[in-house]
Image (cartoon, rainbow, N blue to C red; front, side, top):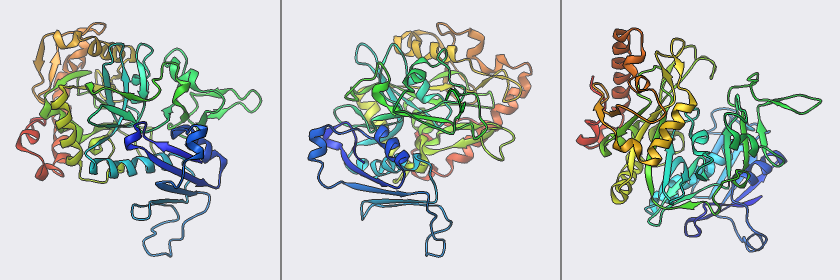
Length: 423
């Protein structure tokens, strides 16, 4: 299967998939940009080839092969080989890793984020790890979807790397996420979902196999997708986190230095039931919200992001889609309607014009009010029954941030290091 990575013709790669399963070919037909008949006829030699024989195990007796699963990417040979795993996402993320290597060399910033665009061509980027709401919040019926996961920022603006979307679909419903629900049709790929053998109806609430159920579909299956998937320079940079400790505010405004600190940190939290062995909330940090796919040092991407944000006057926000009123098991998950109201207020400009106060631990600016959101929800400490317990949890999370950032402190400026929480 031949396809393109990158909607910008000046930064496009020709990718060839050679695989042993039709399922993998269909998946990448969804996820890569589908060439026209003319483009396919003139495709010529690919820039990179992915060989997927995932049903066959790797041979651990070979030097450098540590198990019967091996995902190997060779930049010199422009090849990727997949053995011992049939997870289709390995191909998608392999392409992203290639872009994360090649694009920064050209002065182009590659980013693990979703993007959408308003009526006035205002673009927003949504950074976040799995489960933070990146795909859900970018699929907005009032804004055009540019892409849900991988983008690049050039001197001309942004472009989507992919030709499709890869959405989590656990507990999916038309009422909560109509755009994603209606995008699942003939040609889509569902992974790890449970279907009725007779009617083929999908039970999206069934997590028997895993919480990480997924849907892959071409981006044009989203009714308000913008094709070609390109946009202007971003007006808003939104960092999404799912804080299972109930400490971070549902929204805060970041200084440029704080934006770099949180970008390099890439914080979210895993909760019980999502992964084997996770029995209580665990803080997770992934540099640039995609450490597994980075090739260069995280500060290289962070410096490029800072330079482009400064050049184009982009605002930065930290949005917590996690817990309020206490941590996991005590408090409750932030209602999606409040998070959507926050995003709407960012886009309308209303949230930029309210009064703010400074969080005493994390130093971020918390709004006193936000249209459509109860004022009490905006101040995490006030949502806890035991405010002393909140203070302990806040200090503990601040220390986790500090300990994690030590890895990058030697290559970060004093201004960025000082933009972290106080401990």
